[in-house]
Image (tube, rainbow, N blue to C red; front, side):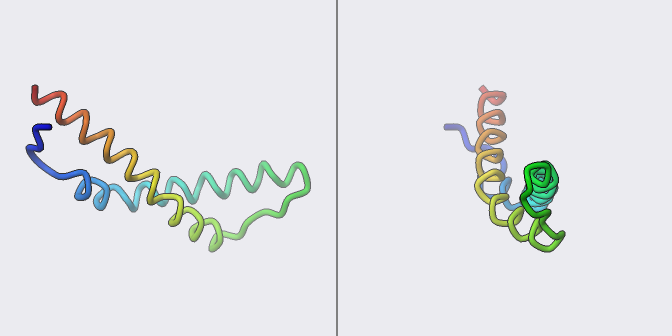
Length: 75
């Protein structure tokens, strides 16, 4: 591994607000689709909370992917 530039952890910390926001929107829209079969629609607060939780592993996976692309481009 080359490891020039930012580490995976730094990339994840910088991208986390975007990942958490994207997950919150996805959770909210999934709850809207779930309402078609009788499930409750989540409030904005619950959607943000759940999005913040599932945003962590999603952002880490994306940061690893970005770090891998950086390493491959440096070869």
